[in-house]
Amino acid sequence: MKIQNDDGVSRGLPHSTPAVQGSKVDGYAKANQGKPSGEDRVELSDRAKAMQVASISLKQTEEIRTDKVEHFKSLINQGKYNVPAQDIAERMLGEGLFA
Image (cartoon, rainbow, N blue to C red; front, side, top):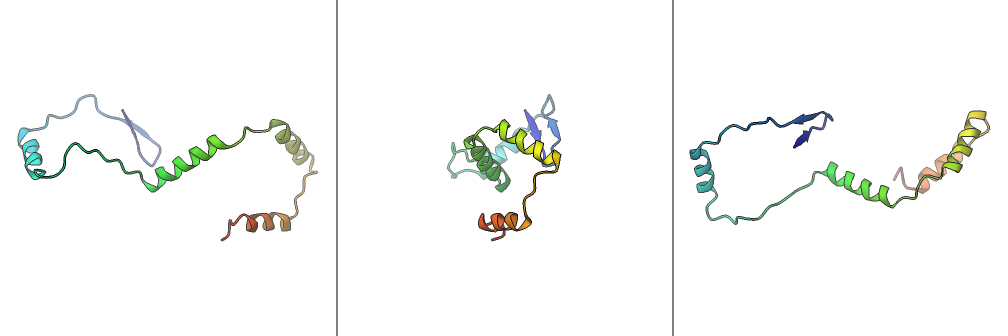
């Protein structure tokens, strides 16, 4: 099992885990008497939820049209591709990026 922190560094778990003393386990069992058991819960962080949404969106997108990409790369490299700033601003506002 690997654990990855927010800093992106993976750290493996130690090969041996320390022994748990019976009193600690018994204390936990006593503290949780009367509470429902056998029910596992998982809660995702906001970051994990956003990544899940992004992953689903990525799977639904079309594949890259390499012919179009190469065409525009060529125009950019030749200095022939120019998009007026007004057009960019209108598209950004129209898509609600500044809402």
